[in-house]
Image (cartoon, rainbow, N blue to C red; front, top):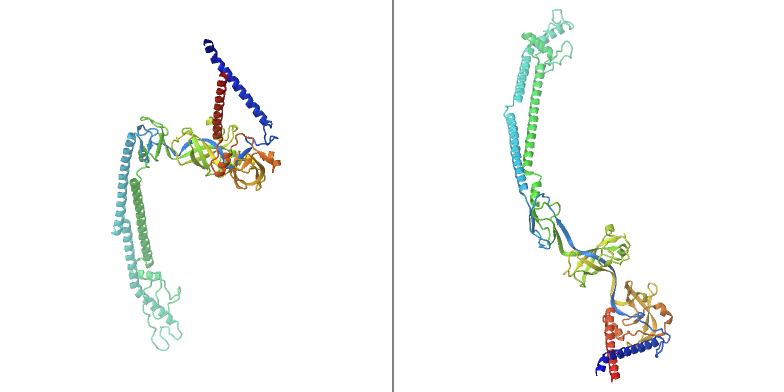
Length: 594
């Protein structure tokens, strides 16, 4: 017993190991024989479809996209500053706090501003009082001037009016004097002229009597006094021609009158001229008074404007504005992103920062080659570092028309991706263009400033038949694919046939079939160039993983099994097979032991 007890633990493993090696060797021989065409295969020439040679056409979304990295930003951000150069008196918020619009944020010390404003108000009050006094004085001077003109107490006008009155009296006296003296003298003159004329008439004697014994001529009546500068008219006869013996000027008449009166009074013309001079002096005095009034009125208007300016435009408003700036309120509803000062500090820049996170943006850059493919409104799917595999949605809001040289070939991007997101092949110094993505739908878990990886869908065809891009051949408008036409869903062989198709969205791998002769569940040959000469011939599927159930599911419109799900399924099947082999091996070992 002791001998078997020491050897049994080692003997059994050796037999199991030998058995497993034997099974493995037999399996290898079987597979090698199958690969060489032995074992009754229908395709003795090895032309069967291997894994990767075919695709089961199924309804699936086909899209092309551009992958980018970026960060989350608010729809609006704002730095809070103040023009007040004083100490921070109070800060009422902290980073991360949510604030409402017009909520109190902080305040500054205003003691110095209060003193300056009080001094300014005193100066303004004094200026207003002085302006009011100047206006009152100017108005008083204007009123006094108007009153002096109205009641005749203006000295200049009074003197001028007195001179007019005196000149008028002198003129009236000259006219009166001329009218009394000249009437008698003129009659004598005309009598003398008539006598002289009679002595020269034919038939008259030297003593002045006519030859007919009649009476001599009658003396004409005295003419009426002439106006200043005019000649008296002879009554009953036309006036003698000027300058003749029988005509006299007004000055001559006045001289005769003056000689007879025994003196040399002012002539009518002189009196008239003196009267006109006096009237001109009066008009000048009145004009001067009007000019003085205009000057006084201008002084009143100027004083009134100064008073109004002192009352309305009290100051430039700088101190009042600074006092308003000393108390800071939130201009938006959002979150406090930073507080950059402490109480007691004298800020040199911003005090704090706010962000409106009611809407979120993703700010990123794309490579120049990707710009033509991206359009405003393109659908976007993205994940963030903070939320893991959770997918969020968005849309392209804006694509900058100008390159951002500062963001070319950015360093330190997450995942080793370039800002354009295409891969790691972007060259240093490549040009990128800023792009903004608006987040739509759920935003729970997204953090401001957090990093994201976004997929911009540049084109897509929903629920179209999805086949490999290389499976489609032919010119535009005459696209075709090769299929293995089978008699039933369970068949693993069929005839190679050509089908016409219409294509939609595509990417570097797949293309959407939007119309034509291809149907869901058809087995499409991925490499038409290799099978183009076998159209009409029979081929089979040599892939051991081929599952006819996938054909039926594709025809029924069920979701296509992903490669990951298929791999998991194969792993489970492999585990079951390995477990069964182990059980068989253990059973064989047990039989040998017996």
